[in-house]
Amino acid sequence: MNEQQMIGMHAVLNGALISAAEATVPVTDRAVQYGFSTYESIRVVGGHPVHLSDHLLRLQKSCEGIGLVHPFSSAQIERWVGALIAADAISDATIRIQLYGGDHPMLFILASAMLTYPEQYYRDGVGATTYRGERLIPSCKTGNLLLNYMALADANRRGNFEALLVDRHGHILEGTRSNFFAFRDGVLYTARDGEVLLGITREQVIRAAAKLSIPVVYEAVQVEDLFAGLYDELFISATSMAAMPLSRVDGMSFLGSYRRTLAIKDLVRSWEMGEGQ
Amino acid sequence: MNEQQMIGMHAVLNGALISAAEATVPVTDRAVQYGFSTYESIRVVGGHPVHLSDHLLRLQKSCEGIGLVHPFSSAQIERWVGALIAADAISDATIRIQLYGGDHPMLFILASAMLTYPEQYYRDGVGATTYRGERLIPSCKTGNLLLNYMALADANRRGNFEALLVDRHGHILEGTRSNFFAFRDGVLYTARDGEVLLGITREQVIRAAAKLSIPVVYEAVQVEDLFAGLYDELFISATSMAAMPLSRVDGMSFLGSYRRTLAIKDLVRSWEMGEGQ
Image (cartoon, rainbow over all chains, first blue to last red; front, side, top):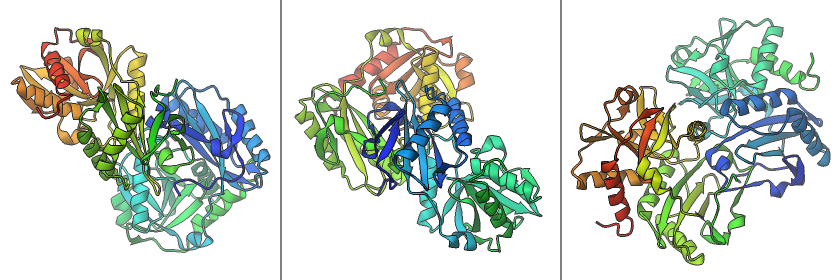
């Protein structure tokens, strides 16, 4: 299937409840053809959309970053998300907000089965490859995703879970759908804010590191330093993953107990329901 | 309107005639979300799709370039284009072939009103701006078009017709929907093959230059050389434009008679019906 399995009967288009089958766009729409769009993926746990206000703030920033003008306020979108959850009595799900620009902006809200991963992935870690390429306007979550698609397809073809994007300077910046973290001498490294997508979960990981007294340095990992063995524990973060340990990169092993990664993951997950702590 | 005005009652999806209104894609389709797609725009003149085999060859190359595997042969697609032209008795139009990848590829063929420009544009020239940014996999015509969208929107906002994309080395490579040419000391310069989209009309322009005994050099124009006045006649080429003179770039004037540009344009247009000459 090309499509994510949708759950429930409904979707939302510009505030109106529509049937899920009606969540389509014309092939002739210019914003669709050009990827002039922004999006967010949100976890819904026990009917509660996790960090929704953070996601809506980032959606606005993505729109501002690419000049996508639309009439929808965060308060409106928040209500519409709530309306979809109520209409289909959603408990656990992944909700996607997909916003197309142009003269007649279209904002869709769609629910699909919650994206989860086997416990084994956390225990044993997952594999990643490296892929050369730079995202356009890295801080914005847009429809300009061909690099991500190709890099991930390449990783999957070679039996890996994620691809790490490496820029022209040899910096590992982020994954195709995740942020990247690496421990070196007890310090946790991650790329600077301007260079990567500002992950909602990345923020939570940094909060968790502080709670665990792990110092964080905002400095991208050089790919040759990684392969020279300077880093001893790696993970990626994303809404669906929290923190997911990497057992290998391009075949180089980083097997371990993932003690620090899993402590961060547990803290991040524990904060999902009560966001204030 | 976000949408191009479609003409006729029909479209084609994977070889089947459908109603034009059915030419939609699910918002949940991963290939749509990621721009994992390729496309072509083809002029139809007097019921004849101009340079169709060249467009279909480029479509295949675009698919190969991004790893988009699909089951459609050029011969099939050519028949389907013919079927759409027959079904709607199309005389003059722009036909778009839009191909989405993934596990279930979707190939749409759509006809819209022929894209034409006022004669005045050719007589007086049109304005362009410069815009910094590099296309991903420049030789492929894909759905990864946010840079093109933003650059053109910026140009339009400032009253210009096209934006010229300038790479990290200060090379003017191409327009957002056109190739770029510039005359210097009687020689016609354009970027090298690997750096830009291999325009079907670009090829015809180069053929026309040969016919007119204009030497062509494959070397991208440095933006500072342009503004230093080293070039004295500029134009862009595209299927819809043939060769369109530029009267200014970022406010610098290149007004003139456009004698050479218009001679090239006339030759390119004269070849549209009988492609063998």
